[in-house]
Length: 273
Ligand code: KIV
Image (cartoon, rainbow, N blue to C red; front, side, top):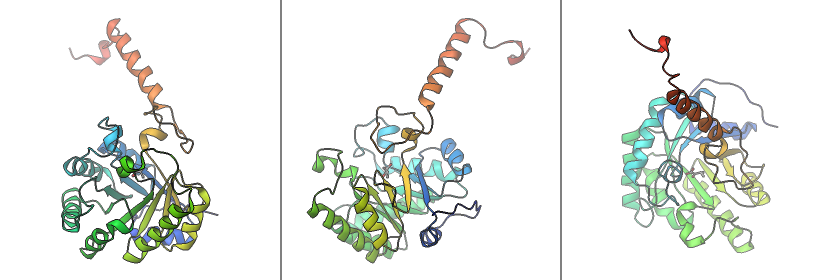
């Protein structure tokens, strides 16, 4: 049973581990700009992820692959100006850490120096172990990401549930242990069977945050535009919509258009004479 206590202290990687130890669930949501990050932080979110899903929801790309390090830094900086309490994690984008651990360190250092974020997130297991080790050696905390890793969508070929087969499930379990042993402070598990996420959550000491990974993880993450109903094109089974802001925004904008056309806006009170 999770016990939610409102606490205005800054969330740190250490505090997330304490939350896991006392069974308090961790809340995490994406944000990419100053205004939304400020609202989400005021609401009491534990972790704000400046996700490379910005590539989809902010830039309109089909995948997360096109977003650049400079663009992620721009989003990270905007979010960091707003956030007072939440732990802020910035995704390293595709092509800035895989296959070259020196470049990985360079990318992670740029994110930390230029955005002032608390830590970074990267996708993958054994294949990125060298990059993980080198980044951690500089003192930058890392959140791992396993299961459906959107930067590898061209390898998977589909966004369906990962690790349903035994071999992939075993690799995921061993990758999760490896990331913990290397020193990651948490991992995200995306779109995998709930009982596999439960096993990993129980076996690891570090927090496991799920998205489409069932109820047993130590915390949950969603993409802000999806859960607020701003982006309606994406409606997987795991998504719960907490608002219909898309419809509300369209209604408000229609109302404004009508008021302008009808010469109803601005009125006397809204004008300077
Ligand atoms: O970029 C992102 O929004 C993410 C979440 C889906 C976890 O990585």
